[in-house]
Image 1 (tube, rainbow, N blue to C red):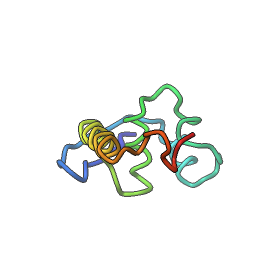
Image 2: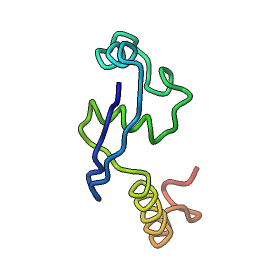
Image 3: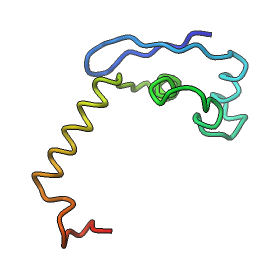
Image 4: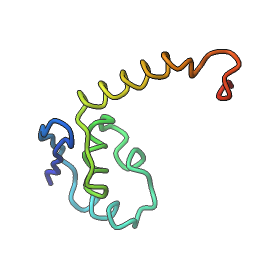
Amino acid sequence: MRLTAVCQVCGVHDGVDVAERKYRRWLAGVTGLYVQEVWPRLSNQEREIIIAQRTNYYLCQKEWDEMAQQMEEEEAEEGFWDEGSPYEM
């Protein structure tokens, strides 16, 4: 079965093929497993397409990468990981 998702930011369409029975069991919660446990060989992006079937929210790889870069830049500007930060590990 072909699952598709549309990026909420740029509108790109992505898709992944999965076994219908396995997908329906996961969607119904029958397996009790996380998507990465059901489809360990799929890429993170392919699993995001599957998750989007439940959440109705999807970002393509390009948009994920841009968002991550932006967050890293904002954290660097704010000194998020500087010594003495309340978030220090």
